[in-house]
Image 1 (cartoon, rainbow, N blue to C red):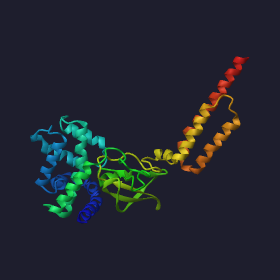
Image 2 (cartoon, rainbow, N blue to C red):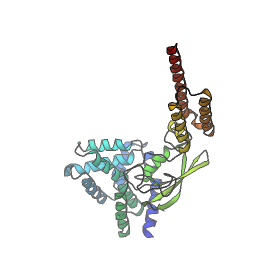
Image 3 (spheres, rainbow, N blue to C red):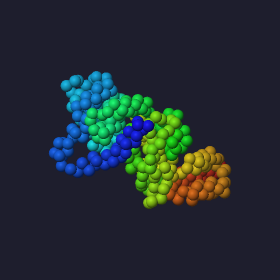
Length: 328
């Protein structure tokens, strides 16, 4: 029970702490540098030594002892203050900072550690102070085990039900900051989505706690999603019905069944012979139009499908004309 209380307390702190660096980016650089060490290592030398040990483990001791402290400080700072970089950018940067002594896979492990587990431990220190008590140290050991079992994929092994929309198939992320970045990119029917964290829960498919977010557009609720921010991958897949850009949303606004029907109709047209009657073609067009009427926001996405159908008609007409000419 005590461990769960600690987890909830740190999670709530992470939600508030997420916005801290955004405001600091606009402050005077000298002031940031003065506070930087206390920010990235709130537990002082204890935190530095912990991070050095873990990074050395993940990089298999490839970084020289006289370079490892600077490498740790530089990489951790970058991971904490940059909200615009993609995961792959961090990997490239960390590898370059090592003098190309480490592999992409090793650089990725360093990124996951600083973005996730290390920051979780730092937040524990920010909440409870240093040194941490025995109970919290035990809790952090448990979190290390949870992160160690985290997925490297866009979905959690064994998950079932609608992806992201059920507790049995939550979205894997590395941290709460990662969750916020993911949520900020979501669109629903071409419109930006607002999110409100409504609580937390557990799942039978992952050991880490889930955060529950209510999603809305213009004040109207459009769904609820579940995220587990204790994995080794920042998911790049949006739940069904949502997308990361307006353009992708137009295509994604079709349901899976409607997409299947569209593809079947196109496939039908592609395989029909030259003798296909215009009434049959018109029937297929009416079926497509009905789907569009059910999804008015998806008109742009369907435009390519319609143009394809028109092209098929033109090709059939040309082929028929050539055969008639050859018959003469």
